[in-house]
Length: 572
Image 1 (cartoon, rainbow, N blue to C red):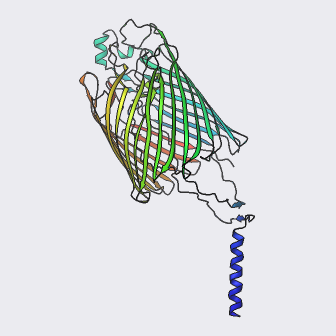
Image 2: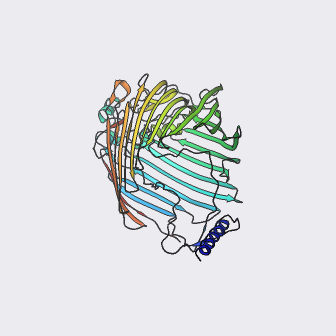
Image 3: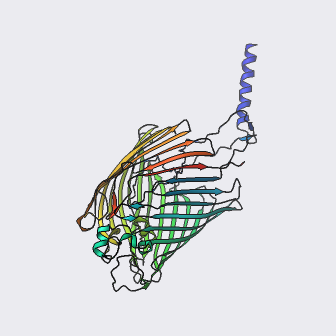
């Protein structure tokens, strides 16, 4: 009886093993109760409305890379057929978003987002945002600024193989050249007072219309042929007769291949044509304080940057290689001469200590156009200009990223950059009030040392901190010697959300041997989510109440507070 039982058990086990190898085996899994399928731990996306003080945008971008980044592996395991889940109800969609707020200095804020609901073939929607301020600075008068933008977007999948996407946008941006004191005005123009001057006499205004259309195939397998193409068109027209038209055509292609019958690689090709034409028609009406000079109206023909960037990614002896180059034809800086330029594009990476330590060394470079549109975003107080150049950079970088634990990660960087026609700014002497800037292009070399640390406790607590030190061959205008950032985010029971941030910006060399003091900005935000559809927020900036300067003669407001609410309408 005992032997019969053992033999029967073995036969049943053998039958089960054969059943698992049966290709025709198919099953449906019916899940009852609360079931939450989880693919992989991911960081929650959050898109809070940005707060901007009345000075405008900062000219310096903090280059923190503290988010964990997965190095792409070329090895692809065999796929397992997914089980079918029966009876799972569709969740509610929140396809709209409305945020309204108002702050001191007469600062209205509005954000609107709406998109179509679930559809396998198409998606479309609209985005709208507005932020402005309408107040005065003691001794300086009005420092109004405003930004309004609207975008229509859409996406359509053709035959499950191609994706067609497009967006159409318009942006209006204005500000005042308020960077002159009443005492300066009385010296230069004794007959004027600030109240007797029309705001139109020192107001800058920009309008930008954009259109993008892109096409890409839906092939996600890197070992098969994939491609994408995009067309970008923008037209900028500004006060005082300035205009700029930009046409950008770009395309990408990739294909996987084998090396020596044992190593896999992927070959890529990126092509781009970036073309500009611009005009400047100076009339009698110029910014207040303009000293007449023999400036000619200009109308330039097409100025171009053509780039080709072939590269391959492959693994060899435990190292991951990104090897390529960028060839560029530059007729942007001098529109009558075309210059051929070559830039490296090589990065070598290695994972150590069980993938906890990632090391990389790279030699890269590139060329980008300093257009009117990019310059007015960096410095909103520029004069009508007709001199544009393309900035070239050669970057030699070493990085180390250490995942100390599941919650703690550190990142360090050292880089040496060769900068050619690097963009900075200087006060234009043709403006008697000493408050209007013109672009200044310099050749320089920069050494950067940086480090960041991030602590992430799921979605409850996140603490980040880091900074950079910069050493130049010659210190350029309006560039800090160092910067630092520390921030903390707290999620209390998915109902209360707190954010605290402190930015430090080192002193900067300004015009006429001036030195702008260190900036120590402090910002905070509190949000209470009443339910999934309704929340309330309070945003605060410059809580140190510092009257800081990012540009000479342009002081900031001391503290900004915006209170508001967010509302969404759920749909099935």
